Length: 503
Image (cartoon, rainbow, N blue to C red):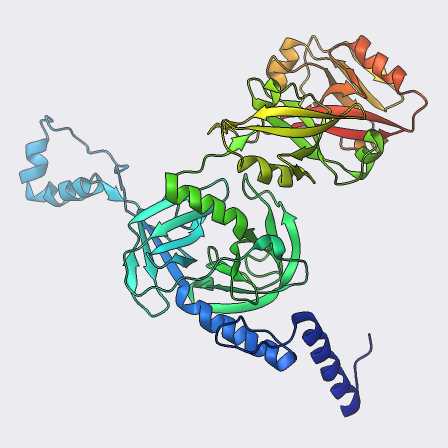
């Protein structure tokens, strides 16, 4: 793009920018003291930033955490015990007295260094409730809160939810100002936002940017549905609010994607709608009770959409059904595609998680699924998510074994497989309930490798054919003959998923 030259072009650029901003943000309203600020031109947009910051600042707090010192034993050993015949000599002889004291000091319990941290938060209720990140305050012995006016208080109640990284703390303080919570579902890509917090502990700061993306899941926490923003977020901003131009909190600044450790233009915020629900549970019950289905799921990719004849991004496909779960009780099966739950459309795993976790435990809901091309309704009675519910283990390498000699070369898929024996399952770290054939070799550069198949994975299904023996595997391949691709259900230690291997 060429640079603009001359006063005329420069003035044209400013006028054009002002018109664009005015069209995007709207016109000013009559009662500026009561209504949220709006902008008709680029100068009024600056006034909006100023006014939102002015109104929000009294409700934003800085947080410092301290973990108390702990005593650890000395590493040196005295040259004698309490009953040693040399004890009197060392204690009373002036030549050895100083040496004795030195050994004595070295054996005294030592104090480990204090762990300190910083973060941000915001007041959500004049009674002293403050919302922040769980990782800011979790495990701290002392949480000190500094208000914008300089007053300092110690939090008396700390309640955290590590799964979502939301926490609520309480301080007993007079004359507090709360900040309103907005509706994160109404935020769209391109909307202006302001981030406020205490980066690097230098003091309260305001940065601006836009919503860059929605429904992000970078793998930071168990429960993710982040708003992505390019507003500058740095260490110390964690727990601070992300605001819309109405001055409402629409997210909690949580994490950054950075190679340098500082601002690189990609920040993540917990949507306030999720945070509001979590904080409500923490305030009312002291913990968060989530419902769960008991299924493994994956999104409908472009390749899967062709195999299942469904739109990309519509629904979520079941890759595993857990025993004694609501899904098992409702006879959900691997390969079922969840389209709706409790009257809400499902558009992927994170969307489904958001719907499920807020359902009432013990209540029954209707789920619409797509099974073998037919729409089927199922009734599910929700159970509480177990505390141990988490992601599985890391991969284990496939090692040689004296009994691993029954390899079958599968030229069509360019990989080798063998039966999954009990010995091999134990070696690979799989439970005895897992059935299928194990991949022992994948040809480099093949379509199977491009699809993500690797040595040690278990093939549980080919198309609609369940695989637990080599005969079933070969039968599944026969049924796939003449097709452009083969649909496989494969498993590793992160769970099961469907993949499409092009022929």
